[in-house]
Length: 247
Length: 184
Image 1: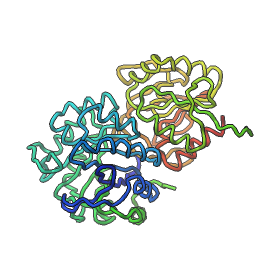
Image 2 (image 1 turned 30 degrees about the horizontal axis):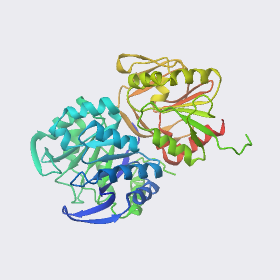
Image 3 (image 1 turned 120 degrees about the horizontal axis):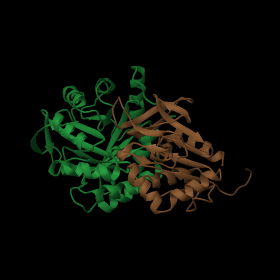
């Protein structure tokens, strides 16, 4: 198996990195390219940019951002948020993204996963799943769907998703650790790589989830502080977690 | 070798998504990107997506002929990821697709472990980690480097193919590309 990955996640709105306080009052915290480069310099294995713009007004800015990131960084990055069609995804990849993440659009129209995989290859298609109490939620966690997370992950894999990005709504933002039960259940249900998300507060949480997942998404734990990623990497290495030598 | 003229690199654009990343990585190393698959100092065959559509597109754009001619002239070609697999005699992807035949052997679906195989993995010899993202891998006697039992690099004549993505492999990837350029 490849080495476990640490993946900082940046929320972007109209081309800027933002930080929300309980989904209200998004605060501008910087330029995505500069922050991305700083995380890359601190040893990030990949990056995820989530476009949180509620409207489509920000799309041209998103494409411009993707191109600027690709021009600057030499590590893989995924873009998610608002992707509804193959054309949306292809434009992002042409601009320089390596993968796209789909969530609500795939729940609304599951054949989208297969369409994306056929056009772009499974390695470029990440199925993002937000779950609470084991149940998948759509629309940024606001809408319960009645689907089980493990079953939806398995369906997504069968349709052509190349990775699963699993966020525990229950653990997200708590900094009390990843939802290991949920992560283990989904890891056992699929044979594609799994990226665990939600709840990281310290290195031990990351080490624990990497027993089940192939990658850990890092959001608030490293927000506004790329240097914190370097510290976490060092702590994980000292705990015996094999990370790549990023030098 | 002592010329100051920037090395000219042609990238086969057959609709694969990562042409931009490859050209950015090469430009960073001071190369000039040109559209001249036969005459350039180095020709890169990148690759993302499915084998059958990639091969069909190469043919449609006449790039398969240009690559064959270049290979027979002994001029350097670098295949990346799918670009390595397309250089084999055949790939079993999409029900079987004939390749360019620069390398003996075929590409087969990965078995065991999580597939697609995505992430940074150590390549031997060298011991450096590179970024991989693939579901098929080469089985070839021309292998010159491996990663966890998977062919990471293969060479015949002027063709070098790598399964990893040097353009996405940070500093290690840049060093690999620089080594490729230093030989042209």
